[in-house]
Length: 467
Image (cartoon, rainbow, N blue to C red; front, side, top):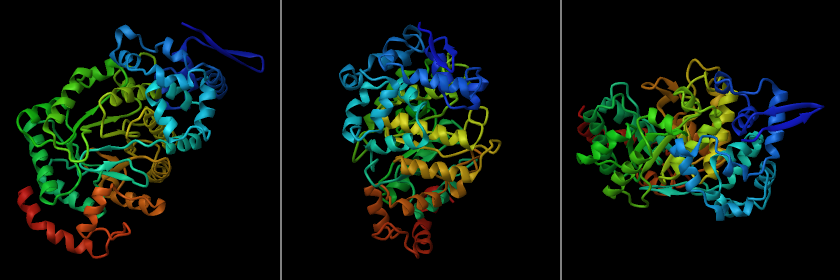
């Protein structure tokens, strides 16, 4: 174990190991203070960042933050590391790596070629010495394309998860929100419901409902009921028409154990969903959500700062070739990300680390009502992520999730991004929107669709939803 140090104006700052160095170099956030890991002041943080910049990238292959023998996530990271892909940057320090990432030499092709040679810890380290504009610039260069019934992540595209949650899983309420979202051009990433209960019967009812709507109207998208993976596996075993398997994942074995999962269970879910062969344009069948602070909240962080733990979760996700991954960045609360400034920074870090590892990153641009944040902060993060090339965001009626009781992005927010930046939905979904009379050929909502389409949908939705 190495001791790291840096001197500023004759004062020597020492960091007891790599974990301590990474934690002290992190931009300030409440979770690291809660864990007793953060720098005591700005000067110590700058010293740690300068020491980190001088650290060879190779260090992360020889000094594990969590022991290989006791953590299956560490074993996954080390065992799956591609040394041949790493060779192109193996001579660099963390600071040199930042400079290279910002250079014209680091284009889409070269970033893709080194992706499997990067470890989450390397990316967490370099993100800690980058400004917001650096995170955006480099993320924008990355392209990650996935597919199931719609193709996500293509250039010039911006997708949404239509999130029609209901506090009682009422089919009528869920269906009404789906119609609302479709009329605003949302849902090309997934129509995904967080169930109010993990009860198998209730989950299967929602799976059947989403499947019936998608197939009745030939909508080129996929559905997901965001229940525990073991419930999804059981639903598949009972013949449910399931598209995507969902699971929250974290960056340590112990944190994943608190979620009731391990890598073996994730593999079982992947195999079960692929066995159904329900995709038409691709075979990506997993949907993962993450969030800074989850390992700390489970007392499973092993003294690793929350942003580095989050990056390690992306190694778990990458192993299972997901269709969708998103950081639910502000959902865990102000104990971990205190205010809008911390949430904005964390969202951009998460997107940067995930994209460079080759993940189809989205973000739930959100906050809880007891955080020092508001919808203006979310407008800022939404805009910055869209500029950075985020694959998808959430679409919730009125930006207010009535089941999960938090604030996120609305159907209107997706329209704002698409109009402002000239972005469009997934191509298959866009073609359906035009055919259905919702969008015109220039990706604009037709003025009369809000009046005509509910009438077209009404009879069948009443029958499907049972109201």
